[in-house]
Amino acid sequence: MHKIHHQIRKGILGLVDFFYPVFRRFMPLQTYRYAACGGGNTVLNIFIFFFAHNFILQNKVVELGFIAVSSHIAAFIIAFCITFPIGFYLSMYVVFQGSFLRRRTQFVRYFMVAMACIGLNYFFLKLFVDVFGLYPTPSMILNTAIVVIFSYLSQKYFSFRTQKVNVPIQVEAPSELRA
Image (cartoon, rainbow, N blue to C red; front, side):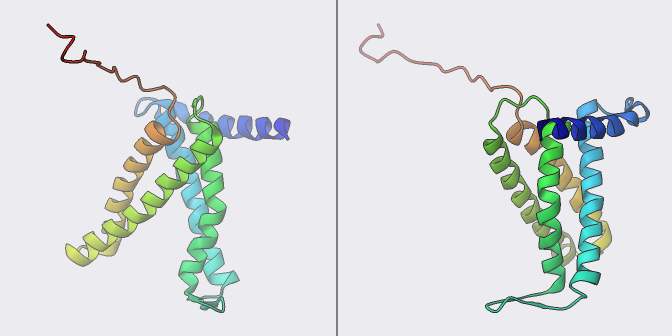
C-alpha cells in the first residue's frame, strides 16, 4: 500500500509540475500546485454533481423516510463525500508537504476549513445576490475568488503548517521582587 501511495503521489507531482514552467513567472510552486490540484478537484466536484444530479438521482427528491432532500442538495453531498478526501490527499501529499502536524490534526483542521468555506460560499452568495442585487454568475465568480484566497491561507497556515510559531513569552517578576 505504501508503494502504491508513493507511485500515485509521484505521478500526480510529475503531471502537475510538468506545466509549472509556464506559470513560474506568475506564482511560486506551492501556490501553483494549490491552484492546479484545487482546480482539478473543483472540476471533478462539478462533474460528479452534474452526473449524480442528472443520471443517478434523475432530478428527483430523495426520500429518506424522516426527511426529503432535493436532488441538487443530495448531489452536492455525494460530490462532497468523494472530492473531500481527494482534496485532503492532494493538499497533504502534493501541495503542503512537510507539515509537522499529525494527520488526524490535519484532517480535522482541513474539515473545519472546508465547512467554513461552505458557510462563506452561502453567506457571500446571499449577500451579493439578495442584498446587493448582483447577478448570480458574477456573484459566484467574486465569491469564488474570496473563498479560494481564504481557503489557501487557512490550509497553508492552519491545516498544514510547516513551522511552529514561536511567540516570545514575557514573564514579569512579581511586584514584591521588583525594586
